[in-house]
Image (tube, rainbow, N blue to C red; front, side, top):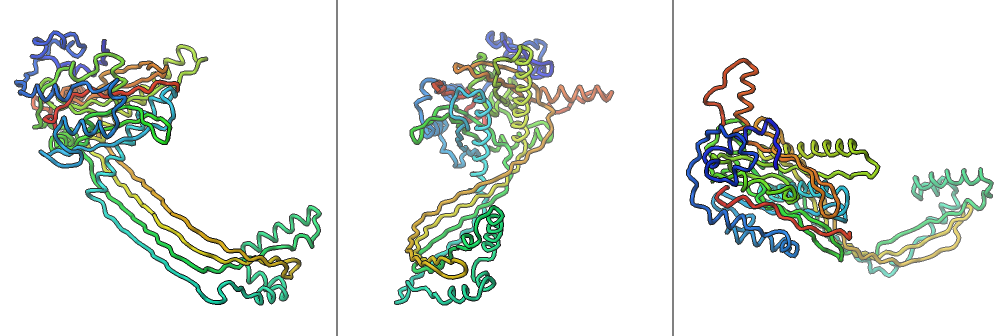
Length: 485
């Protein structure tokens, strides 16, 4: 049984109406408590086949064996559109990120899932704007050198001999000054410890000569800045992955950006009515049927209320690492605090939908180093050269470095949002998951505007805007058809 806060009455008003009298199953939902709602519901368009196709359960047991690539391919087949290509004013994107922990039995597993979702969404946005709005600079350096001289292995001993005979000042000029200073400090410390001074005056002088060099280095720099307004997930999936003989859990996301979602994002950012309309949906189609169903949900959803007006649902979640010695009150407080974190995460998802600016840069540095060196090491004892050792050294290295960083900034008002559900569930591995479902609806916006008008003593305007842990594969409830976007 869902328990709603008083603010959720706006959603109740919105979801009552004609469907209340037609659907007994919906009538049992808490959202239908507002029996006085008189919202006019437009006729449902004939898209039942598409909705049924999009909401087919593809999830739990079967999903565990389905790879990320197969999951994306299945979505492309269902929606008839390739990821990353524009068609009908819509573009779909996909992304995946693994959790930071190694086990689904980690007490922080719920938090790791939420953060993996955030990484997948950010990487998806970053890849998109780099591909479509990025600027690239590339620099390649090629170096080729070879010494085939007859005296290529010979080192001039005169310089070191003269430097040693000239004493410390001349030797210091020849050697690295910083190294000499370090040696002096070390010498003084050893003398203070009673080590004989003649034993400390030993040092090695290295001479190097490059005989061969065949190097290539390529640097690639990319940067971009762009607005990602109206990006919303269509499907999310939580599933096990295996690589390098080890397992982890991953979160995969398929998101869409369309003319409808961008327009709705602009409208709610300005708190104005929208001309975007869609297929009305009942509460039964939108929210999970039971408590454990919330374990399948993470992130944002775009759908329509029973009046066909667009709305957002944000599933914020985290976990509570319960300590065995906690009292009941301490455990309850920990859950409440975690639900506050989940609420903030959900609200952030809604604001980021309204307007997010993403700045990202990446660099790749690849190359090959192939060099031959001749070395001569001369031992200096009490200022005089001693034993000489010659060494040949080959360097064969491949360089490969990657760096990526970015920032996403979003800001917006929370008016129009309401808490629809707070939940907590212990999964099969004993991890305590908690979450908060936050919605943005025109019904709640109207309600908030009316309350604000009353507070100001003004009447509301009639035209106001309306481990051995089990790897649990999970797929979000599919509530969208392609016509929704």
